[in-house]
Length: 467
Image 1: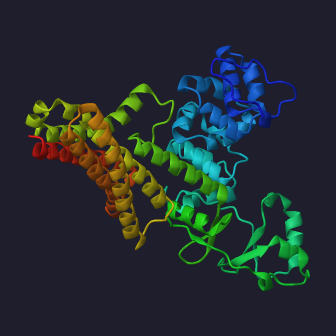
Image 2 (image 1 turned 90 degrees about the vertical axis):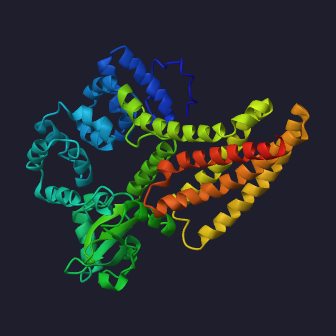
Image 3 (image 1 turned 45 degrees about the horizontal axis):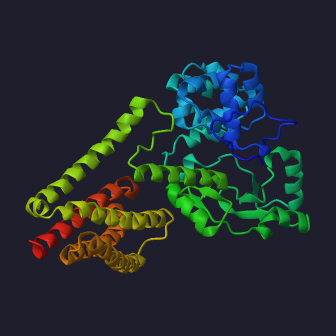
């Protein structure tokens, strides 16, 4: 593997017989940037020919919008459909603005229903109707089925194209059918879905059992139980099932127990990654829809909302400080030390908040363990608060040679860090009960709480002990 290169170094060539695994993503990005800068169109096409649809999609998303159009024009025609399906919605949409329905039909010719549904989410209704008319009947039915589900439901992520066998046939018949339709099995297939005459899911048939048992044995004698997922279940809950059960795929059934699709591990991994990205953005006060190379005004608008909210909370904290104007005017040292109290509380609360939100996303927090965690964070906050209170009081004593100031800063830090830890778990739990995403607003509320408690405890104690 090649090592990452400094930003100023731009590779001029990919050496020898090209093997994608030998080059890092950063190396390939730098190489493509060089080709784009030189407008070496033929070289761009040759380079993209050697990349997978996943790599091309990632590279496109690593360029500003104006360069994406140039690169997209050089993507080989046979890869365009798969690349479009892998792109984020905001990246895909501008690329498709000038693509005709005839071109889209060509791109989607060999794609599965999931990818086609993803692409058609970006086009107008008239284009969608035109493209749907060109699809094979089976694919068209599958795409229409996927489109009946909400974005958050398992059904919109499942694969409706299934390999299923009946319970009343022999292993010999199954093997013959698979030989005639060997393109249905992929390299990772290990089980077949077993249904009855009314399409009710009965369980799974292992490929190992299919091979090792007497070929006259009926499928019904070898059915293994299956962990199923309802098609209307929230996809986040489905992801939690995959994690807890450690499964690679799961049959999807409707409310009548009928087999309607299959949810694969790769789809769940994509959901988990999207959820991680969303949580990171929410914690930072950034819109979920904002991408790295979004237009300037779009990014400014999405971020300004949370900056405005933050300004409001900062003014609230400032109003608290204003109530202690007299003590601040009397003792200048307090103004110097005041940010330390708020900062220590903010960091302590953020640590707890991060751990708690992760636990909630993993489905690990609920029921009686919430009280246990609340008690734990109370003691963690108190222990760390006392330790750092003593350290800061010692520093303040060396700095200002005033025992009262040292006592004030010590007590304030102990109080604020304890409250911060308790707030770090109680705020997200309260928001979840109110059906508000904790990652979206918990950090803003926590900052407000730690600032107000920190300033009130620090300046309040100073008013009592010093003045």
